[in-house]
Length: 141
Image (tube, rainbow, N blue to C red; front, side, top):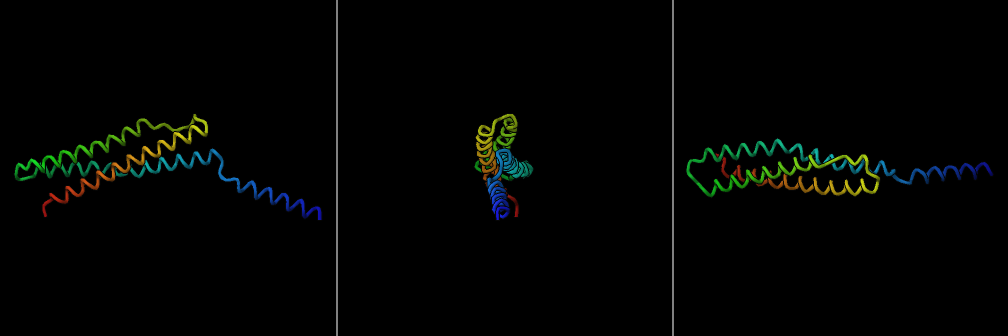
């Protein structure tokens, strides 16, 4: 009977240890991976930004008339694409892996970086959507 109680106690201790959740290091690594995954998704859109900018420039050059309203739209959209590109480059230059930070500071830093890169991604997505709409509006049919 004593053996059964000891075995049961050991099993319960083992299960309790398993349920303690991920370690601080695992939590930090998971959050850092999330930040870098958002970065990777946004980075994959950089080619689209450059392609759309070239399309806008080509469409602007090919306009038959001196449509100043359209020219203004193209220039504003190119500026928006440039700003989205700059936002990504700026985020990448300022980001540093939080390897030397303590857990609490690292988690705070990563949460801030996650918010920043998600903002960059939203800026890129909205700019890409607007540029696509503009190019579709002016491309020859």
